[in-house]
Image (cartoon, rainbow, N blue to C red; front, top):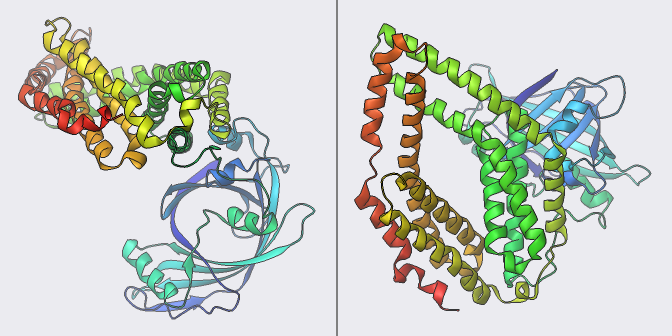
Amino acid sequence: MADVCKKTKRTYDVGPDTELPDLTGGRVTAVAVSDVAELQATYVDTNDLDLAAAEISLRSRAEGPDPGWQLALPADEDTEVEIRRAAGRGVRVPVALTRLLTAVTTGSALSARVVMSTTRTSRHLSGADGTVVANVHDDLVTATEPEGTPVQLRQVEVEVVDGDQVLLDQIHRALTEVGMQRSSWASKLQRALRDVDPAGQQLDPEPALSKETAGATLHRYLVGQRRALTRADLAVRTISASVHDVRVAARRLRAALTVYRRLLDADRARHLQGELQWIGRELSDLRDAEVAGEALFAALEDEPDLGAADSARGLVQRELTATEGRASAAAETALASGRYLALLTQLDMLCAAPPWTDQASESADTALPKVLAKPHRRLRRAAKAAAAAGPDERTSSLHEVRKCAKRLRYSLEVAEPALGDPAHRLANAAKHVQSQLGDHLDAVALGEWLLRLGHDPDARAAAFTLGRLHARNEERIPLPLDDYRRAVKQVLRKKNSAFLRTA
């Protein structure tokens, strides 16, 4: 069995002779120094250091306070998710952990990369009531690659136990005042690899183009979204997060490959577009059920305490459980499939060695406006078609406008580092159109759910409540046309899009 916990901590690189300062003050009224502990851990990774590149560490401890396997995943700047699993009979990584790391390793074998022997002196920081609020671990580490020469490093790790950001910042100020610096490395493995193998594997792929080119701009975005896809996939597998972020990363990658296809080998780009569309479609039913569940239960919260309301809640829960069960099974099958693994591998190959065309070597400020003009024209045509659509085509035509706004927004995100404020402003305008239509289309979808529930044979006792919910939702469905038209006008007005026509 695996345990999952979140840790809030900061790590500092420390010189061998630096002394820790007095850490009392604020919430900290006492500091107790524990006995020195001797720890040993074996860190594993792929031959290409895929875990280290993703700021992930996987280690095995044979003894000490936390024996077994420990997988550390970045959550945000000061937080990581740690998954612990008991050691098995052998030394191989448990299959359950390798499956969690599918999006990172893409099937590559994991093997021992560095053995770290740590002499740890811990300081336990307590508040006025004696509660330990933080631990400060002073680690002297000896890191050794298989058949390599041992190297030593020292790090101080501050881990909050019963505190908050204010406490973390307080300790940070005390440490930096004596010259300590926050580590620029995401893990001890990354830090150790710099010393034990300074000429080793490169953690970040390079585009092989000048950084001012259109290709280099696109490459940075593709690498960033591939990493976003990894983080989202890990969250789904480890903490049962929503599939929403997986779909968003896949959609951003697809938009970039679609709009900027002229910079890459067209056949490779089209193939990846299709595969990214496939995985998004495989996850869409589960995401739709998640959104519907949130909306339905939020609506039920506002209903009076009637017996029928209880019947409605039971009916909604039953329908969602059945729908999410089917959709979750389909999503799990897709994420465990060889096709998905092949997609991840192909994305990695694209990032490692992009198949550039000659246009990728053009300067970004010249090439990108020409590329961006096409999704902008596409949004203009979709908005015009929606304005002329009849009642039967209205929802589908507005959905097309939203898709075009989203594609324009994501393609502008690619170009923002090169084109600056004009691209940023236009991306925000496109996002506003997307949001306006999103609220409207969500209400339409909720209405369809309520109608379906109302026709359920078991809905008789809940009919009154479902009718009330449907009537209230009908009031939300009409699109605020003035707001929508203003949002579209902001995207299409020449003042905001003039930079697209300068090339």
